[in-house]
Length: 239
Image 1 (cartoon, helix red, strand yellow):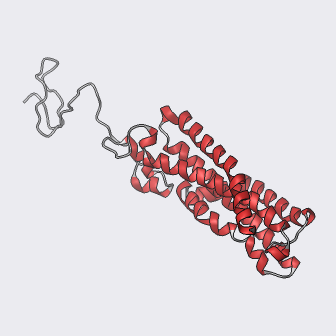
Image 2 (image 1 turned 180 degrees about the vertical axis):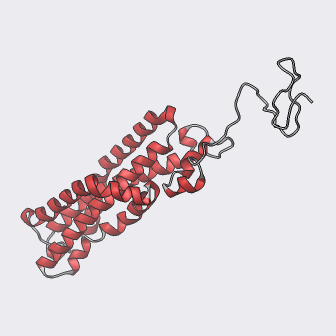
Image 3 (image 1 turned 180 degrees about the horizontal axis):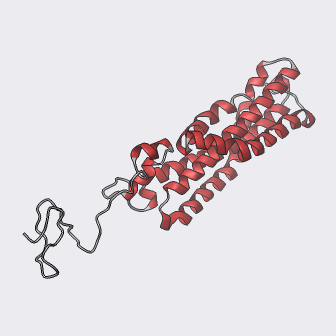
């Protein structure tokens, strides 16, 4: 035989091609067979950071190959980012209306001076959590888990504001508004940042600009439509 068990030629350069049945022959000799990098694309490592379904597309035969609009992870990430943008903008419009509405109509009857401290506290919480808190949480939980927590907590955190109408003491209402503003800031950072990171991770490299442009356009459209929806919703409730 001209080859040993490792398919290494023994007889020099004129040896015939390897016919070892244990050595699989590639259909295209010029193309190297695909092999996942060790300890990088393993399901255990990627699922820890929520990236397994994202990197799975690089394997031949994956179900989510093709243009970006046919990839389910990309569509889900874009839909989540758009929905979060709409809900948070809707909350930004409805909370001041609810706080300033007379108590006879179910509001709190607050002035701008009463509402400003809690909203300012929410803005400060947003900046601190974005700079310090979110990077730590993301390293511990991963992008996928942060996105899940942010998306699932968006609606429940929004109900903290109208719950203030159940309290009769102004100090208690203020305390609840402080808590609600801080919760909305934290949940917003978790949802917004994680979903936009997921959009970038899911997008094909050659279509990343298109996917980001579509995501920002959809989010801008929802932010523009949310004030009109909030006004119609508030009018319907008041009537």
